[in-house]
Amino acid sequence: MIKTIETILVDVPTIRPHKLSVAIMNAQTLVLVRVVCGDGIEGWGEATTIGGLSYGEESPESIKTNIDTHIAPLLLGMDASQVGKAMAKIRKIIQGNRFAKCAIETALLDAQARRLKIPLSELLGGRVRDALPVAWTLASGDTSKDIAEAEKMLALRRHRIFKLKIGLRSVADDVAHVLTIKKALGDDVSVRVDVNQAWSELDAVNGIAALEAGGIDLIEQPIRADNKAGLARLASRFSVALMADESLHGPLDAFDLATIAGADVFAVKITQSGGLIPAIQVATVAQLAGIGLYGGTMLEGGVGTAASAHVFSTFSDLSYGTELFGPLLLTEEVLVEPLVYKDFMLQVPNKPGLGVEIDREKLNFLRRK
Ligand SMILES: O=C(O)C[C@H]1C=CC(=O)O1
Ligand SMILES: [Mn+2]
Image (cartoon, rainbow, N blue to C red; front, side, top):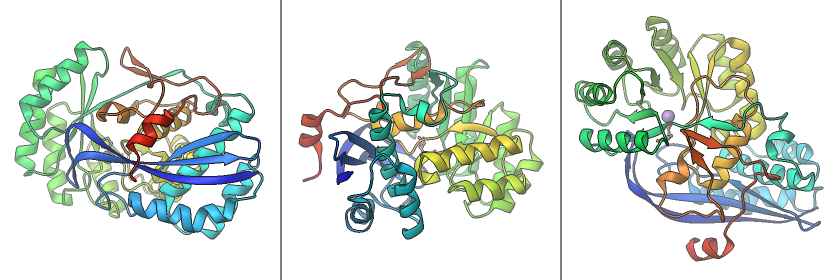
């Protein structure tokens, strides 16, 4: 039986300012959900977003209010071992609120996998890999600081794929910044950009042409999320891979984009998809349509990152790797044992459920009072 559902906000400073075209982050608000079941088993989920309401339509505070007020009461007393029925009820009655739904589904699946004493990946069809390549985002806003940061990550053998956040400055300044970094890091390092919707379609035509000529590997969400036809025009115009991120709010968007050949790659995010099962559906659409896969993040902490890792470990194709570095951008760890990053890869946890434990004392200290 589902006994209690609690939503906890945790404010954690980042290790440095993280500059996106839509927000400059100096801290991240983790949104954690704890489900306690009648058999004593506990499950955890996460609904963290970026930049309050500047990235997505749900803020940390609205997610907490909507779970506490509208979603939890629908679930209390239901059979905790019937996750499908619980989520079907929520998906029928609750409109939107993909992040909240994702956290609830994660917590219920974590509890159920613990009950069955299997890693979450095995409840999702089974992992095909135990470790995932992890990109790092360079977003200090300063070219030489970004180069130094990338060189440090290469020396630590932590990351060899770098995603550069652009779109705050002019196209010409951004292109110069990216190509200086690409030159400094050399041919063996993959350099990609994320514009976070900042460009007009004409900006994108000019910007992508220059980036493609300079050896950039991947262009993420150059134009507005709702301009899917524009994405399709850009995808057919250029040979450099074009990735949809904000345009993908779940399986229906995936289907629409696949139908119009709107992207070469999908950034799959569990929260943006509305849960772990919908994220797998997004990936399935991609694979059926011959679209490449990338495991995305909303810069979650350990819980959401572990959940994403279990999901992505089941993808048969993951040709563009992942960006599951969220916990590494934060100054505080909420897990008893941090996730393991080594040899450029994140190790997928293999204990039951998510395979991570929350440090309760630390959480009680850090949580928003
Ligand atoms: O991809 C985004 O748009 C959001 C996020 C993921 C990595 C990062 O640095 O920002
Ligand atoms: Mn993105």
